[in-house]
Image 1: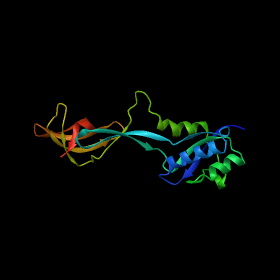
Image 2: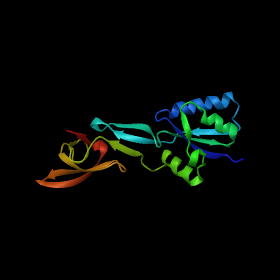
Image 3: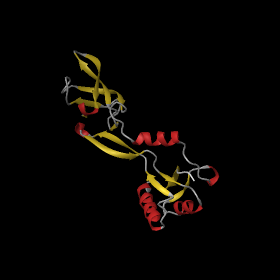
Image 4: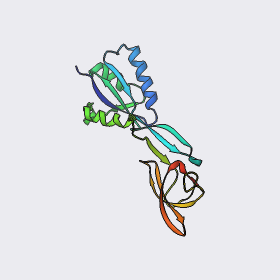
Length: 178
């Protein structure tokens, strides 16, 4: 029988508890040869806090879901299905359906930081908000946020230069709320 990835539905917020419960059940029932790996897909998100301070945190990509690599048979199905916090397998009509390699890669590709690719960044700065530039050539200028670009970690700020509104692109850590 082939090892395949299956998706478990869990109570949201209980993903880590389900993973540890399942690991304990696998060990106590001697099923290491049928249930191989348990993963909770996550991604690293950089949040820009007050004063431009960067804080990295790990966020779940699919809250309420856990991936399990296993050989599906009645015994392994029962052990996983009856683990506290597991509400069922993802599949049609209650039948577990394995992920394709492409589906697995797509889900887990989000959770692996790729070299040279910036992590997703978040900020509490919003369009229309007044901000002060805290570093760079426009240090001490005030402006209004015209656009927030979390994928690049930048904001476009309208700054008054020589009496004219001029768009300036800055990184999240170069601006602070007024």
